[in-house]
Image 1 (cartoon, one colour):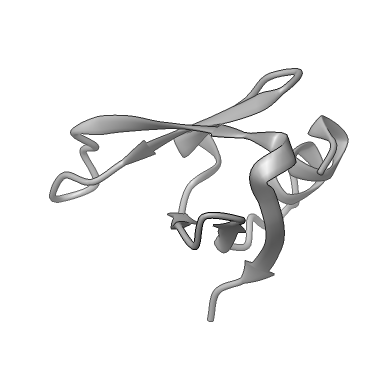
Image 2: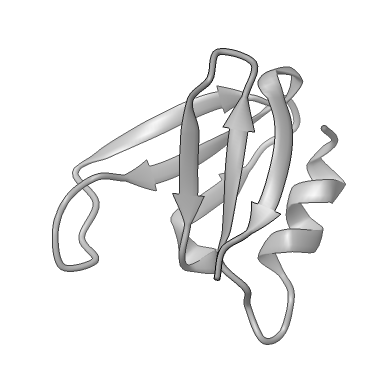
Length: 72
């Protein structure tokens, strides 16, 4: 995927939560636009935690992302 693809998902108004899947079979759910930082070659996702407060960061290479899908 390209950085622009993630910007498109993240900047939608109104924001629609989405899930990304990687070649390794990992998935990350993006439920808020502030939860993801898009860089040139990777995305950084704030993940885990409770009550909307993440406890770690997931670094995912854009080349590893195989699919994004909206959550219901």
